Length: 339
Ligand SMILES: Cc1cc2nc3c(=O)[nH]c(=O)nc-3n(C[C@H](O)[C@H](O)[C@H](O)COP(=O)(O)O)c2cc1C
Image 1 (tube, rainbow, N blue to C red):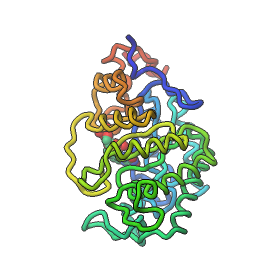
Image 2: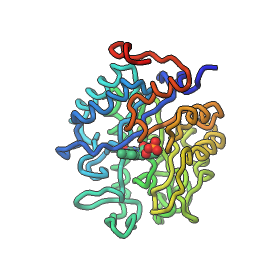
Image 3: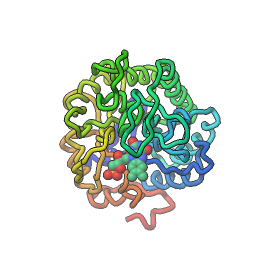
Protein backbone atom coordinates (compact mmCIF):
# COMPACT_ATOMS: atom_id res chain seq x y z
CA UNK A 1 0.00 0.00 0.00
CA UNK A 2 1.39 3.41 -0.89
CA UNK A 3 1.36 6.06 1.76
CA UNK A 4 -1.62 8.37 1.62
CA UNK A 5 0.62 11.19 2.88
CA UNK A 6 2.31 11.12 -0.51
CA UNK A 7 -0.83 10.80 -2.61
CA UNK A 8 -1.93 13.86 -4.58
CA UNK A 9 -4.86 15.99 -3.48
CA UNK A 10 -6.88 18.01 -5.98
CA UNK A 11 -8.93 21.06 -5.06
CA UNK A 12 -10.58 22.81 -8.00
CA UNK A 13 -7.85 23.11 -10.65
CA UNK A 14 -4.93 22.76 -8.23
CA UNK A 15 -3.27 19.43 -7.50
CA UNK A 16 -0.94 19.18 -4.50
CA UNK A 17 1.79 16.58 -4.95
CA UNK A 18 1.33 15.33 -1.38
CA UNK A 19 -0.79 15.98 1.72
CA UNK A 20 1.89 17.85 3.65
CA UNK A 21 1.08 21.49 4.30
CA UNK A 22 3.32 24.09 5.87
CA UNK A 23 1.05 25.76 8.40
CA UNK A 24 1.01 29.57 8.37
CA UNK A 25 3.61 30.98 10.76
CA UNK A 26 4.27 34.67 11.35
CA UNK A 27 7.92 35.47 10.90
CA UNK A 28 7.69 39.08 12.14
CA UNK A 29 10.40 39.90 9.62
CA UNK A 30 9.17 42.90 7.65
CA UNK A 31 11.80 44.94 9.41
CA UNK A 32 10.92 48.23 7.79
CA UNK A 33 7.42 47.92 9.26
CA UNK A 34 5.90 48.36 5.81
CA UNK A 35 4.57 44.81 5.35
CA UNK A 36 6.97 44.01 2.52
CA UNK A 37 8.55 40.66 1.68
CA UNK A 38 12.20 40.53 2.72
CA UNK A 39 15.11 38.13 2.12
CA UNK A 40 14.16 36.16 5.22
CA UNK A 41 10.78 35.28 3.67
CA UNK A 42 12.39 34.32 0.37
CA UNK A 43 14.87 31.96 2.04
CA UNK A 44 12.44 30.55 4.59
CA UNK A 45 9.59 29.66 2.23
CA UNK A 46 11.75 28.52 -0.69
CA UNK A 47 13.65 26.15 1.66
CA UNK A 48 10.44 24.29 2.51
CA UNK A 49 9.60 24.07 -1.19
CA UNK A 50 13.03 22.51 -1.81
CA UNK A 51 12.19 20.18 1.09
CA UNK A 52 9.20 18.93 -0.98
CA UNK A 53 6.29 20.28 1.06
CA UNK A 54 3.14 20.01 -1.09
CA UNK A 55 1.50 23.28 -0.07
CA UNK A 56 3.08 26.21 1.69
CA UNK A 57 0.75 28.69 3.35
CA UNK A 58 2.39 32.04 3.85
CA UNK A 59 1.94 33.51 7.32
CA UNK A 60 -0.93 35.74 8.49
CA UNK A 61 -0.75 38.68 6.09
CA UNK A 62 -2.62 41.78 7.12
CA UNK A 63 -5.41 43.20 5.00
CA UNK A 64 -5.16 46.57 6.78
CA UNK A 65 -2.21 48.15 8.64
CA UNK A 66 -4.29 48.21 11.81
CA UNK A 67 -5.00 44.49 11.32
CA UNK A 68 -1.38 43.49 11.90
CA UNK A 69 -0.43 41.51 14.99
CA UNK A 70 2.87 43.42 15.14
CA UNK A 71 4.49 46.19 13.09
CA UNK A 72 6.75 43.56 11.46
CA UNK A 73 3.92 41.49 9.96
CA UNK A 74 3.60 40.93 6.24
CA UNK A 75 0.95 43.06 4.56
CA UNK A 76 -1.33 42.96 1.56
CA UNK A 77 -3.20 46.20 2.15
CA UNK A 78 -1.53 48.05 -0.71
CA UNK A 79 -0.87 47.41 -4.40
CA UNK A 80 2.78 48.00 -3.54
CA UNK A 81 2.86 44.65 -1.77
CA UNK A 82 2.06 42.68 -4.91
CA UNK A 83 5.53 42.73 -6.47
CA UNK A 84 7.32 41.19 -3.46
CA UNK A 85 4.63 38.57 -3.00
CA UNK A 86 4.75 37.72 -6.71
CA UNK A 87 8.48 37.14 -6.45
CA UNK A 88 7.95 34.90 -3.41
CA UNK A 89 5.30 32.90 -5.26
CA UNK A 90 7.71 32.41 -8.18
CA UNK A 91 10.53 31.21 -5.91
CA UNK A 92 8.30 28.63 -4.24
CA UNK A 93 6.64 27.38 -7.43
CA UNK A 94 10.04 26.91 -9.07
CA UNK A 95 10.49 23.91 -6.76
CA UNK A 96 7.14 22.27 -7.47
CA UNK A 97 5.26 23.34 -4.34
CA UNK A 98 1.92 25.10 -4.38
CA UNK A 99 1.61 28.26 -2.37
CA UNK A 100 -1.24 29.85 -0.45
CA UNK A 101 -1.56 32.97 1.65
CA UNK A 102 -3.40 33.52 4.90
CA UNK A 103 -5.39 36.75 4.81
CA UNK A 104 -5.69 38.15 8.31
CA UNK A 105 -6.93 40.89 10.60
CA UNK A 106 -5.73 40.78 14.21
CA UNK A 107 -8.68 42.66 15.75
CA UNK A 108 -8.17 43.12 19.48
CA UNK A 109 -4.95 41.13 19.42
CA UNK A 110 -3.10 43.76 17.39
CA UNK A 111 -0.06 44.89 19.34
CA UNK A 112 0.31 48.25 17.66
CA UNK A 113 0.42 51.93 18.51
CA UNK A 114 -2.90 53.74 18.26
CA UNK A 115 -6.45 52.50 18.14
CA UNK A 116 -7.29 48.83 17.67
CA UNK A 117 -10.72 47.48 16.78
CA UNK A 118 -12.92 44.50 17.63
CA UNK A 119 -16.60 43.51 17.65
CA UNK A 120 -16.88 44.72 21.25
CA UNK A 121 -14.81 46.95 23.51
CA UNK A 122 -13.43 44.08 25.61
CA UNK A 123 -9.70 43.44 25.95
CA UNK A 124 -8.20 39.96 25.51
CA UNK A 125 -6.66 40.06 29.00
CA UNK A 126 -5.59 42.56 31.64
CA UNK A 127 -2.32 43.33 29.90
CA UNK A 128 -3.81 44.01 26.48
CA UNK A 129 -5.31 47.16 25.08
CA UNK A 130 -9.05 47.72 25.09
CA UNK A 131 -10.24 47.81 21.49
CA UNK A 132 -12.83 50.16 20.04
CA UNK A 133 -16.15 48.58 19.05
CA UNK A 134 -16.33 48.61 15.28
CA UNK A 135 -18.98 50.68 13.55
CA UNK A 136 -20.93 49.18 10.67
CA UNK A 137 -18.95 51.40 8.30
CA UNK A 138 -15.74 49.90 9.71
CA UNK A 139 -17.11 46.39 9.25
CA UNK A 140 -17.89 47.21 5.63
CA UNK A 141 -14.38 48.64 5.10
CA UNK A 142 -12.84 45.51 6.63
CA UNK A 143 -14.85 43.20 4.37
CA UNK A 144 -13.70 45.30 1.42
CA UNK A 145 -10.08 45.05 2.66
CA UNK A 146 -10.30 41.22 2.62
CA UNK A 147 -11.66 41.43 -0.94
CA UNK A 148 -8.84 43.74 -2.03
CA UNK A 149 -6.35 41.42 -0.32
CA UNK A 150 -7.75 38.49 -2.31
CA UNK A 151 -7.52 40.48 -5.53
CA UNK A 152 -3.86 41.24 -4.82
CA UNK A 153 -3.18 37.61 -3.85
CA UNK A 154 -4.57 36.58 -7.23
CA UNK A 155 -2.35 39.12 -9.02
CA UNK A 156 0.65 37.76 -7.12
CA UNK A 157 -0.15 34.26 -8.43
CA UNK A 158 -1.08 32.39 -5.25
CA UNK A 159 -2.71 28.97 -5.70
CA UNK A 160 -4.76 29.03 -2.50
CA UNK A 161 -6.30 31.68 -0.24
CA UNK A 162 -6.87 30.94 3.42
CA UNK A 163 -9.02 33.31 5.49
CA UNK A 164 -7.79 33.51 9.09
CA UNK A 165 -10.84 32.88 11.23
CA UNK A 166 -8.95 31.36 14.19
CA UNK A 167 -6.81 32.08 17.25
CA UNK A 168 -8.84 34.96 18.61
CA UNK A 169 -8.18 37.35 15.78
CA UNK A 170 -10.89 39.57 14.32
CA UNK A 171 -13.13 37.02 12.57
CA UNK A 172 -12.87 34.59 15.50
CA UNK A 173 -13.78 37.47 17.82
CA UNK A 174 -17.03 37.88 15.91
CA UNK A 175 -17.80 34.15 15.86
CA UNK A 176 -17.39 33.59 19.61
CA UNK A 177 -20.03 34.83 22.04
CA UNK A 178 -17.21 35.34 24.57
CA UNK A 179 -15.72 38.25 22.62
CA UNK A 180 -18.78 39.40 20.67
CA UNK A 181 -21.37 41.18 22.82
CA UNK A 182 -22.92 43.23 20.01
CA UNK A 183 -26.62 43.85 19.95
CA UNK A 184 -26.89 44.65 16.23
CA UNK A 185 -27.05 42.15 13.34
CA UNK A 186 -23.37 41.21 13.86
CA UNK A 187 -23.91 39.82 17.38
CA UNK A 188 -26.23 37.55 19.33
CA UNK A 189 -27.34 34.49 17.36
CA UNK A 190 -24.97 32.16 15.53
CA UNK A 191 -26.23 33.57 12.20
CA UNK A 192 -25.39 37.09 13.38
CA UNK A 193 -21.97 36.21 14.77
CA UNK A 194 -21.20 34.44 11.48
CA UNK A 195 -22.34 37.43 9.41
CA UNK A 196 -18.95 39.12 8.98
CA UNK A 197 -17.35 35.82 7.89
CA UNK A 198 -20.22 35.26 5.48
CA UNK A 199 -19.62 38.71 4.01
CA UNK A 200 -15.85 38.21 3.81
CA UNK A 201 -16.25 34.86 2.01
CA UNK A 202 -18.81 36.30 -0.42
CA UNK A 203 -16.60 39.34 -1.09
CA UNK A 204 -13.48 37.22 -1.63
CA UNK A 205 -15.37 34.95 -3.99
CA UNK A 206 -16.30 37.86 -6.26
CA UNK A 207 -12.60 38.19 -7.15
CA UNK A 208 -11.25 34.67 -6.44
CA UNK A 209 -12.41 31.40 -7.97
CA UNK A 210 -9.47 29.28 -6.80
CA UNK A 211 -9.26 27.01 -3.74
CA UNK A 212 -10.51 28.76 -0.62
CA UNK A 213 -9.65 27.59 2.91
CA UNK A 214 -10.81 29.01 6.24
CA UNK A 215 -8.85 28.42 9.45
CA UNK A 216 -11.04 28.14 12.54
CA UNK A 217 -10.56 27.68 16.26
CA UNK A 218 -13.01 24.84 16.80
CA UNK A 219 -13.04 25.02 20.59
CA UNK A 220 -12.90 28.05 22.91
CA UNK A 221 -12.00 25.93 26.00
CA UNK A 222 -14.55 27.85 28.05
CA UNK A 223 -17.89 26.67 29.38
CA UNK A 224 -19.77 29.46 27.60
CA UNK A 225 -17.67 29.24 24.47
CA UNK A 226 -17.90 27.46 21.13
CA UNK A 227 -17.37 23.74 20.58
CA UNK A 228 -16.62 21.61 17.51
CA UNK A 229 -20.37 20.91 17.28
CA UNK A 230 -21.03 24.66 16.87
CA UNK A 231 -18.43 24.66 14.15
CA UNK A 232 -20.28 21.93 12.24
CA UNK A 233 -23.01 24.52 11.67
CA UNK A 234 -20.52 27.19 10.60
CA UNK A 235 -18.73 24.67 8.36
CA UNK A 236 -22.00 23.74 6.63
CA UNK A 237 -22.60 27.42 5.91
CA UNK A 238 -19.05 27.80 4.63
CA UNK A 239 -19.49 24.77 2.40
CA UNK A 240 -22.71 26.26 0.97
CA UNK A 241 -20.78 29.45 0.24
CA UNK A 242 -18.14 27.53 -1.70
CA UNK A 243 -15.34 27.17 0.85
CA UNK A 244 -13.24 24.14 -0.14
CA UNK A 245 -11.49 23.19 3.10
CA UNK A 246 -11.61 24.00 6.81
CA UNK A 247 -8.22 24.18 8.49
CA UNK A 248 -9.09 23.11 12.02
CA UNK A 249 -7.16 24.65 14.89
CA UNK A 250 -8.48 25.66 18.32
CA UNK A 251 -8.30 28.11 21.19
CA UNK A 252 -6.86 31.58 21.84
CA UNK A 253 -10.07 33.59 21.69
CA UNK A 254 -9.93 33.96 25.48
CA UNK A 255 -7.14 33.03 27.89
CA UNK A 256 -7.59 29.35 28.82
CA UNK A 257 -5.65 26.33 29.88
CA UNK A 258 -5.35 23.82 27.04
CA UNK A 259 -4.19 20.27 27.60
CA UNK A 260 -2.04 19.70 24.52
CA UNK A 261 -0.58 16.45 23.18
CA UNK A 262 0.24 15.15 19.69
CA UNK A 263 -2.86 15.35 17.54
CA UNK A 264 -5.04 16.95 20.24
CA UNK A 265 -6.95 18.85 17.57
CA UNK A 266 -7.49 15.86 15.27
CA UNK A 267 -10.88 14.95 16.83
CA UNK A 268 -12.12 18.48 16.02
CA UNK A 269 -11.12 18.01 12.39
CA UNK A 270 -12.87 14.65 12.35
CA UNK A 271 -16.05 16.08 13.89
CA UNK A 272 -16.25 18.88 11.34
CA UNK A 273 -15.29 16.65 8.39
CA UNK A 274 -17.96 14.08 9.22
CA UNK A 275 -20.55 16.54 10.49
CA UNK A 276 -20.43 19.00 7.62
CA UNK A 277 -19.17 16.76 4.81
CA UNK A 278 -16.34 19.10 3.93
CA UNK A 279 -12.61 18.54 3.47
CA UNK A 280 -10.47 19.43 6.47
CA UNK A 281 -6.89 19.96 7.44
CA UNK A 282 -5.60 19.09 10.89
CA UNK A 283 -2.77 20.70 12.82
CA UNK A 284 -1.14 20.59 16.21
CA UNK A 285 1.95 18.82 17.54
CA UNK A 286 2.07 16.43 14.62
CA UNK A 287 5.68 15.40 14.12
CA UNK A 288 5.60 11.69 13.38
CA UNK A 289 5.11 10.46 9.78
CA UNK A 290 3.27 7.37 11.04
CA UNK A 291 0.91 9.57 13.02
CA UNK A 292 0.28 11.75 9.94
CA UNK A 293 -0.37 8.63 7.89
CA UNK A 294 -2.79 7.22 10.50
CA UNK A 295 -4.81 10.46 10.44
CA UNK A 296 -5.17 10.30 6.65
CA UNK A 297 -5.77 6.54 6.43
CA UNK A 298 -8.60 6.82 8.95
CA UNK A 299 -10.05 9.82 7.09
CA UNK A 300 -9.78 12.10 10.08
CA UNK A 301 -8.52 14.88 7.81
CA UNK A 302 -7.58 15.37 4.15
CA UNK A 303 -4.41 17.35 4.71
CA UNK A 304 -1.87 17.44 7.52
CA UNK A 305 -0.54 20.85 8.50
CA UNK A 306 2.84 21.07 10.22
CA UNK A 307 4.24 24.19 11.82
CA UNK A 308 7.10 23.87 14.32
CA UNK A 309 8.34 20.53 13.00
CA UNK A 310 8.98 22.22 9.65
CA UNK A 311 11.01 24.91 11.42
CA UNK A 312 13.21 22.16 12.85
CA UNK A 313 13.35 20.08 9.68
CA UNK A 314 12.64 21.81 6.35
CA UNK A 315 13.21 18.39 4.73
CA UNK A 316 10.51 16.68 6.80
CA UNK A 317 8.82 15.30 3.64
CA UNK A 318 12.05 13.44 2.88
CA UNK A 319 12.26 12.23 6.49
CA UNK A 320 8.64 11.05 6.28
CA UNK A 321 9.09 9.36 2.90
CA UNK A 322 12.05 7.38 4.25
CA UNK A 323 10.12 6.30 7.32
CA UNK A 324 7.05 5.29 5.29
CA UNK A 325 9.13 3.53 2.64
CA UNK A 326 8.17 5.84 -0.22
CA UNK A 327 10.50 7.12 -2.90
CA UNK A 328 10.08 10.82 -3.55
CA UNK A 329 11.94 12.79 -6.15
CA UNK A 330 14.82 14.88 -4.90
CA UNK A 331 15.66 18.25 -6.35
CA UNK A 332 18.12 17.27 -9.09
CA UNK A 333 20.92 19.16 -7.35
CA UNK A 334 20.45 17.02 -4.21
CA UNK A 335 20.10 13.60 -5.83
CA UNK A 336 23.50 12.37 -4.65
CA UNK A 337 22.61 13.02 -1.03
CA UNK A 338 18.89 12.38 -0.89
CA UNK A 339 18.61 8.69 0.17
C1 LIG B 1 6.30 30.97 15.02
C2 LIG B 1 4.83 30.66 14.84
C3 LIG B 1 4.02 31.56 14.16
C4 LIG B 1 2.67 31.27 13.94
N1 LIG B 1 1.92 32.11 13.16
C5 LIG B 1 0.68 31.74 12.78
C6 LIG B 1 -0.02 32.45 11.78
O1 LIG B 1 0.49 33.41 11.19
N2 LIG B 1 -1.27 32.05 11.47
C7 LIG B 1 -1.84 30.95 12.07
O2 LIG B 1 -3.00 30.62 11.74
N3 LIG B 1 -1.18 30.22 12.97
C8 LIG B 1 0.06 30.56 13.31
N4 LIG B 1 0.78 29.77 14.16
C9 LIG B 1 0.20 28.48 14.60
C10 LIG B 1 0.65 27.34 13.68
O3 LIG B 1 0.21 27.53 12.36
C11 LIG B 1 0.13 25.99 14.19
O4 LIG B 1 -1.27 26.00 14.14
C12 LIG B 1 0.61 25.68 15.62
O5 LIG B 1 1.96 26.01 15.79
C13 LIG B 1 0.40 24.21 15.97
O6 LIG B 1 1.09 23.39 15.05
P1 LIG B 1 2.53 22.69 15.41
O7 LIG B 1 2.33 21.94 16.69
O8 LIG B 1 2.81 21.82 14.22
O9 LIG B 1 3.54 23.78 15.59
C14 LIG B 1 2.12 30.07 14.44
C15 LIG B 1 2.93 29.18 15.16
C16 LIG B 1 4.28 29.45 15.35
C17 LIG B 1 5.13 28.45 16.09
